[in-house]
Image (cartoon, rainbow, N blue to C red; front, side, top):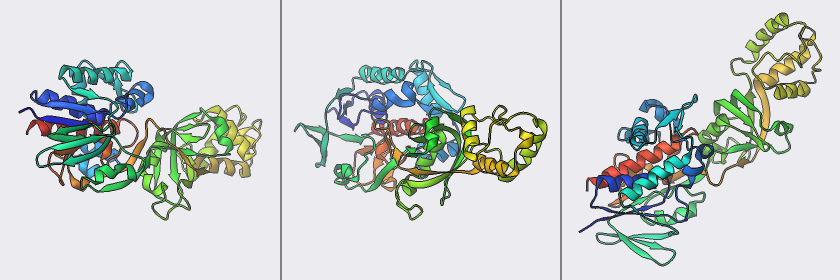
Length: 413
């Protein structure tokens, strides 16, 4: 008798589990149930519509360091399917990937549609059925089957179920998963930008600094990388990484902050220097370009508009020559360049690209099969698990890995 495998969720992890299960086991009936009429939405918009498929990090010990939560779990999982396997999988289906300078990997087409077409094509090739607008209300275990109840009063039976519906912003939205006997780590936002309402620096929106070091005051959180000034505050990889590593601290789960998402950051705009070493560098600068004016000669790789803002902030007239810069103004400028303190009040998350920290407890899932340790023939893949990575393709890699392991596990039954 034909067995049925139902995947709850038509995202990256769900599709990868479904198409690979159907490919590896031709006698299996595979169904994806998606609550909307738009599958693979995150794939579509990821990387500005290019889809950041994975990251060019091929060492498992190095790779797992990019996951604030789930590091030890993924250390085992990545031995089954890792970055090089993702690259090979897509290449075999005529979707080659290329690597950018920062390690992010995209399809050569630079279009997320290439990934979507590939996954849909695989689903069609292996006769995976996709049912849209199916919102799961409950999953019930009978003697030897699973029964899935949907909001449209439809009920479907399955032998195997994989929950791959992504993360949820509210703990109550996991209730139907809790009813299966699993424990949920309450969700908090991850990968968000910092809001700085009323700060004049937001008038410089659009300015990007290639390398900055940012520390969150009163915590041990610190990161370095590209920084982007926006109309609401600050973004860019360095900020997004901090938001991921500090997801629970910034949400107010500890006593480090006065209130959730209210804190100060300290920015070093030229991280090759600290205050003391920059003071020494200034001596050389004032000698080398003594006759040049500060407003015209910016000796650092800082965008000119930002440099002008620093001069204004420190009260330095841009017409002043480097040789004539007073020690008072010099000290102010050095402190701004190496330790500018800014107040953050609030965050901005992106609805379609929302990433959460939290989900199903990893101690209740086998990383070698993605099977539940609580109930039989139940599997998990993707962001429903308490795993999340920093920006750069790491969350998608977890989706491909967990989805493939589910497929491989079911193929063995």
